[in-house]
Length: 378
Picture 1 (cartoon, helix red, strand yellow):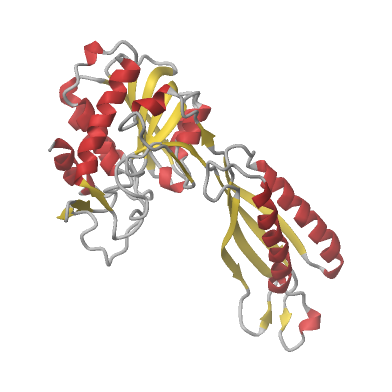
Picture 2 (tube, rainbow, N blue to C red):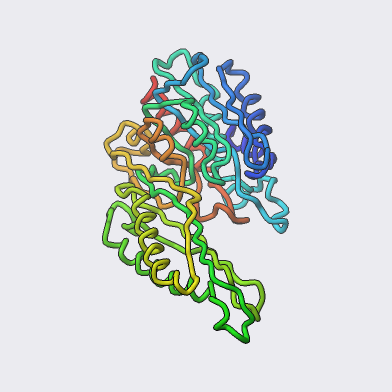
């Protein structure tokens, strides 16, 4: 099977987000070279000065300006890091009908299905433009997709975004927002705590208010999701310098995943109201707080009646779902597309040494993509 052979080659190419993805892009171009398709590269450097490349490929000439496509099939090229204990991370291994390896389901499995789907296609039979879009840096904030939007690289009527969904189409997804909250107090020797102001104790009081906000957010529901509301989480907290020092600083990371019917700024505004009130009450004691927004990405929602949803259904009465994890679909929606997220494998195995993709789902995904191309571009 072509998809399996390609996956073995692709998994062998390390593509952690901290690395340049050019080796993957060059491999994709080598695979597609016999088709004689047209391509454009969109290069940028990340904050560490590492080269990153977005690639757009089409059987039709792409020109020099903004690209307009009927269908964009989109896949990122990076993976999360893998630990040294996973010695076989870049070696594809088969066990019990599953192919194991870093990126096998997130999301190299879908990527090779894209290539296999077009490998035997008669491109001159397409009436509307198809584009294959390969992005960088999805795992660290969808930076490649953000680049495409900010530089008006491509607009599409429909988009299929590859992510592991066990081939069940996802017509809607929550957004992803992240902020750093910093509380500042005054250091002192812990034997004389009244000489200082504990930033950690103050942060504890602030966290109780944020927990109450999380409860309040449950009232704004979108029952297409489970859970049906915007969720809020404090996943990391740091503070203090030594066990016998009243801590002068404490910071924590706050994330929220807004339902697509709610603007992500709603939580930020309510958080800022909490901080303003907190600062007014605590300022006289030398305690202050501030927030820095790190990510602010809305969700997406496509009608279940959309042609792009129907094009990827396995059968007329197949299940359609919603997802809570972040994808590039909201960015494609901002580029004008009705978007669906779909791909082989389960996110439950991703980002771990358990990562794998069912061989049967790879084969079926190729068939689904070929059908979608014909339905939407043929």
